[in-house]
Length: 130
Length: 278
Image 1 (cartoon, rainbow over the protein chains, first blue to last red):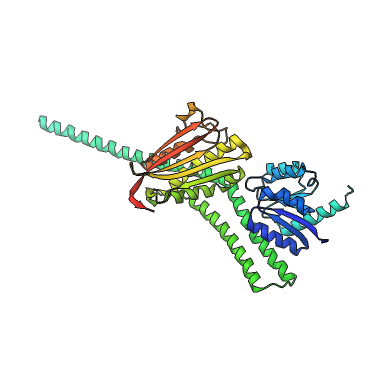
Image 2 (image 1 turned 60 degrees about the vertical axis):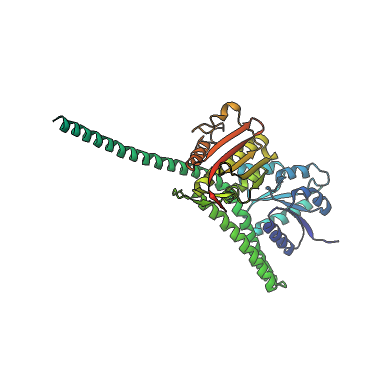
């Protein structure tokens, strides 16, 4: 069984998705991705990630609606979510935090900052008593 | 004597008429200039609205550029088995992303240019695509499906492409607004059709939306300057009156049908150039 931490990325932009996937793989994570919002929940249930990176603007189903779906499902609630979005309006950020996301990165972000946040969040989750 | 007096009066009248004609011409020129400025102001207001969209549309490919540069750095630092082919592929991705950024800024710059009143042979379908591209974020945020039924072989029209793009942009932008007001993030559909009516030698653009629609009492007023049903701060009431002026200037016509709560159809008819196809 792999001891690598697992990151799930949902973003409909191919260039963002592929590059971020490779960067995280090189940073020693196991990574699963999707460009299709409708398959996110099922893929997350199957992959059981330690953290989710979620774009807000995807066709048919927005990131915030997906947050609500993940929060209300026994199998997915509690998995930390970091938003990665090109939307940087205060109202979007507040809405996301109200839905329980633990981080919000506005594109273009610094990958090293994102990497630190991912590691910090996973370490905190593991250290926190259930 | 009478003849001399008559001639003098006639001359005076002619001089007065000439003076009036000159003043009228100058007044017409000032009205035309003021109108152009008004159109340009309305366009700049649209561009202000687009600023957020452009930032968003650029930030996605930009992160593609930055991530791939970071990836090259990491691969070099970690001394991975990194072939020339891998390197080439990453550079290609960076180039594609950078070109996407450049395409977005170019289309905004094109749109922001002032009209010079130059009419040329234009393809309606191309103008429609350019207008929709500018609204990509609005369309995505509001979960709107844009369905295109763009007819093949629509004859070209003689038009000022910048003005025509502005008119179509305004109607599609209004359609997005109407859908958002009705359905929020649940979205809706904008259908854009182009066709050619040989009987009247006119190209027809139909823009249908599934938005909130326009109440019957307001339908006759929508093209009047400063009439708006939008809340304060969301519209000047000039958009559709400018659209009508632009279409009239192209010897075309515009009409609207709508049902409150169900949506609207804007239909523009423009005369085509003598049968030539584009």
